[in-house]
Length: 152
Image (cartoon, rainbow, N blue to C red; front, side):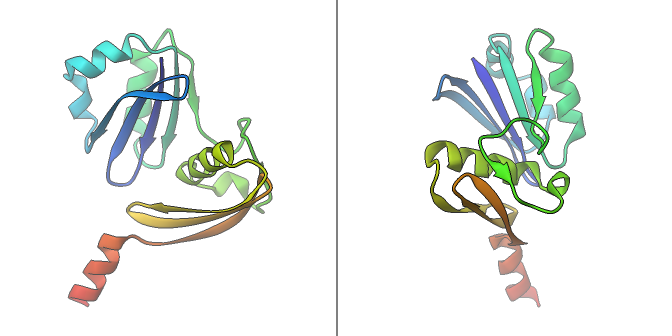
């Protein structure tokens, strides 16, 4: 089983996959929720590979390095092999969440023109043409927009 981890600004999403099938998932708001979670820890012992997209939480990466000692742990960055090319002036500044969104979209819809919109704490718009990431934009998320309209 493989573990895919998405650490966002607000939530941490963890999915256990066999091939392309999601077998189990967890959505948490703090790393401490995992430490004593028996079902999660049991699945963790069955993990063969781990990939982490982590925009904020270094502590979680260290947790998996300590607890997945038999599993290779890949940190998602623009320097690892991806299913698309990056035509972006500063690829090292791209958020791991944006890379993950584009990788998923290109894997499902290869060699097409794509607009990938990711609604989270921020809304991210990414453009990919024929497996080449061109760039995009980031704007405040829905809750931030609502708060700005309501309070300001």
